[in-house]
Image 1: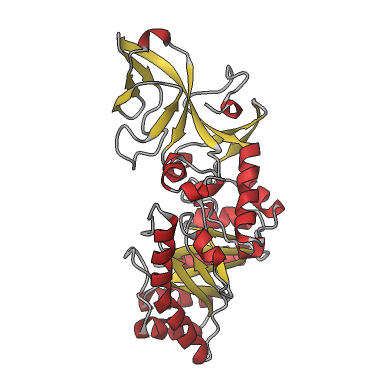
Image 2: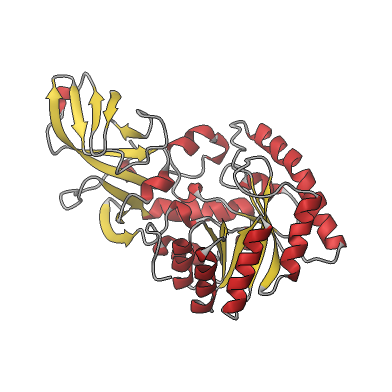
Length: 371
């Protein structure tokens, strides 16, 4: 295990708990800026950490634009006075009113959001007009994930034209998220992005020829942001998220991103020795994300054995070394998927030089802050 992860004194650290390593975090942010060459080309996604202090670290590195997925995350960014905030989610129903309230409550920030359907555009226009505010709307483009968005083409151009003529709305560009591009070899990922991007660029060119502004294209996630960063395309903003904290999956799958070091771990303790070959830790799936398969939700560092059972508050490991563990012993685990893991914790202990120096609230893990 990396010696940087070890706490010199864990006696006052609850378990299970989330640990953020501040020095590694700062290095990851610096490497993020280095990858794109200019912080103005970055719009990192806050959904990974949901934490005000990390936003402040990114601001100190020159990053002025952020992306988020929930109204609570957007409000947290507004509280941090981030100048440019993209809520990368289609606004529908009462959330249109909440979005309008955000725009009004945090005038130091410019808010934008996504739409991909005429009804959403109509609902958002009505809410913003009623609140006497305006906001930019990016058209969400489906480039192959088939989760949200509209395929690039004539129908997409008509929707963008609808945004441009709707009261309270201003056309803000295109949102191009390719979450399906997880090819492990970087050359395959690059080829997939280049193939995918052709119809998007045709749409952009068609919009500009029609006299419509396309001020930005917000592109990619952690796996593909280096591809977009390497392209000489005006108005492209790269929006990685996970690499700020990083995790087991990304560290394993994307060797071309190995300058990003895992900066978040979980501290767990032995709570039981139920059989001569089993050790149970207090690390259930209410403390670590459960979307990876059972047995692969985290890696217990320096613990040899097989994860054979995980319940809400228990992780059972079959190991020939069981005798060396006793109740209360500390172990460290690296989450396979750090983003939803962070959302399971109220706060993170902040570690520097082996010492706990602070506690940071996972501020936007809840669905509602004040709006």
